[in-house]
Amino acid sequence: MGADGKNQLRITNTPSDDMGPDWNNDGSVLVFASWNGESAPMKIETIRADGTQRRTVYTAPGRNEVSWPRFSPDGKQIAFNAEKANGYDIIIVNADGSNPRAFQSHLPSAWNPAWSPDGKQIAFTDYSKGKATTESRTKLYVANVDGSARRLVAALPGIAQLPRWSQDGKRIAIQTYEGTKDINIIVVDMSRGEWKFITHHATPPYGDETPSWLPDGQLLFQSNRDGVMDVYRMNADGKQQFRLTK
Image 1 (cartoon, rainbow, N blue to C red):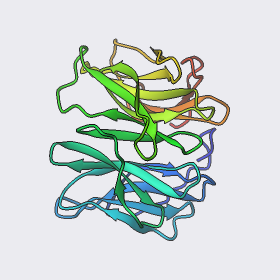
Image 2 (image 1 turned 90 degrees about the horizontal axis):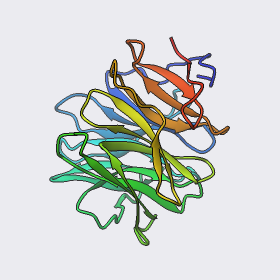
Image 3 (image 1 turned 180 degrees about the horizontal axis):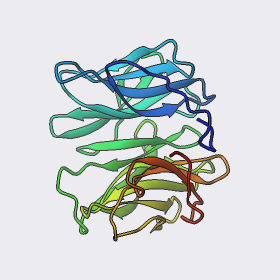
Image 4 (image 1 turned 45 degrees about the vertical axis):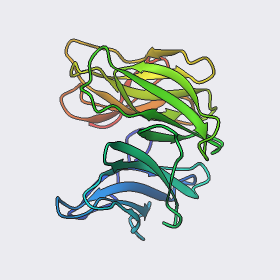
């Protein structure tokens, strides 16, 4: 659909659950996770924007989960979460499905990859299997694509997921859940490690999730604040929130 919520088009139409889509650099191809039931392995697949040329680029072993694939800025690589015995790893694969390899986070478990705008770095978080509480903390890291020069950017409240870089590379937007039935969005300054909530509400609790930057510096996100999940737009400071879909 357009940024104004118009011209909505269904691209996939199969018995599979197709989830977590991401555009390539020129908007011609989508990547997403696909699952066709308990007995079937999860897959990372791509499809053209007109719904043609659907293909599998990665198949998870056994019943392991794969999720939230992200195209590199040049559209040549895809990074995604891949479940393992005691948590998650980040896998990088070429866009044609060749050369799958583990991102060297040098952590026991890592997930939530987000490519920097220049494609030279990946932001990611550590993984916690614990129950989310107001005392929970998630560490946000950034490293070169080969895993070198890793640095801790910030320790964020709750279980924080799905980071997205702003197009100037100066900020990351990320959702966080503190176990209170309330999901909020945080913006992080990547140079200083400072962060702030740009949505924060408690009564009634609802979820503001999956932030994504627009070229003009605004954010798209989904929210169930009106009883069903819809897409909204807002400024980077959380102001001027506008519902796009109904």
